[in-house]
Image 1 (cartoon, rainbow, N blue to C red):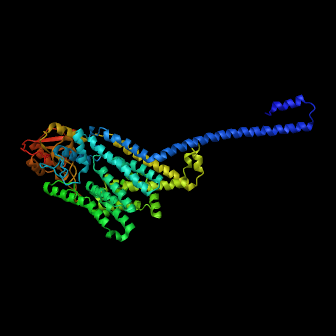
Image 2: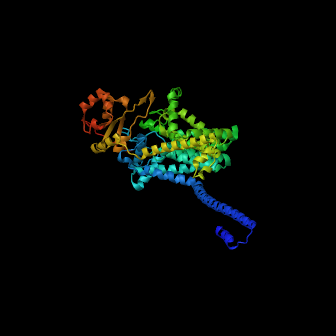
Image 3: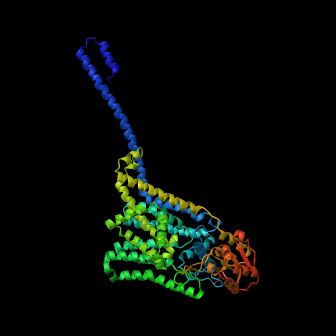
Length: 589
């Protein structure tokens, strides 16, 4: 190789070289030396590029692996993070949220298991001295849970596990529907949002019918959408059965019919009315619910107990008062923004809605969004405060968020994932508008993550429950066959509207039966009437009910003896001095 040492030998060993030859030789050395330097620099740069290329390749391969398997991984992770909801010791202090609804459902499952699995005759514990048969939804979820009690005994986690199974199936069905409607990346983002949005996280593992109804609701949407596109009778029949089960389990799901109507009008116009398949679908979807709720009404007329499904006891409507009240709209909006959109989903959803409107696809997103507004307006009394009445908005919001973020990252590009050494420099290459949108999307995702984390932490944290604590004293001090009256702080009439005032917690946790005394009926006459019908004990947790009724306090001081921990511990148990003999247990049919 030609180097500096070899060139020096030329000068020393051959003195007869001419000046010209020396100049030529020296010039050759300079050229070679410069080329050698360039070669060395090129080699170093090549090695660096190779290293960067290998790193990018590894990053790309890893991302591709997760990209292809993202739906399965999201669903698996969604199930794993929910497992603690099933197995945490909720009953160390009672159900931690929506306790009255969960204990009512749990009491129905208990009574199925204890009194003979009579599916058509659901029983609650606050039915007085009668059997407790109640007008309510079709109790499929408690019945399935009670079947598991046969094998494992009465374990609350079994009901929560049944809900988790339905929730998992709902994740799968939602992704199948999203995949039919939007591109793969948008479907993945929609699934991620759907699984982890706070409201779904809160109500996917509960002792309530919501996860069951939600599954049938989404299954009906998916099957009906497929039928619209494929026109296979089998799909339509399955959609009809799913719709019927959704309406049976939760009658408010009937608003799905509005979505179906819009889909039919889009494809068939008024010709839809002439198709016998549509009429067959309507009969199968609606007839079982009609038959059940007529039967449930008869239970109310016979036994006087109701959840306010069809008649008496409660009203979800009172529309005009709510429609003209700004507070109704702000309440509904705040529930959705916090629990469904998780704050950060609002802007991506708006982008997705605009996308769908301009492209006229997917129309199901638009129809579903309109249907939810219609649904909120039809039953404003409950949608204005009950979180779980908003779960049916989740799939449409998730689709909108998925489309919005998909549009955004199509504009921005995903090259930054490979530029891991200089993300800031890469951001500076973007147009200002794209940079702003990209950073806004990061903020939105952080907001969703923070809100989801907050809800998750509240779900796994246990709180002291005075009702549960008092129920333990009731179970200890009150004989099993005795009937009780429980003072509650909810009125029977709320602003002129019938209200579900019954408080099932103490009844269920203590496994006792009797009457609930609403806040607007705390009088000596009413308590004396219950005593005449067989009540032996009167339970008070919220002592303001007695402070506000001096006559009732005087009546109890004269006719009953306080045997519980007392007002200081939020649990007074009054035992009437003169007991009534009763031979019928309110829990038995």
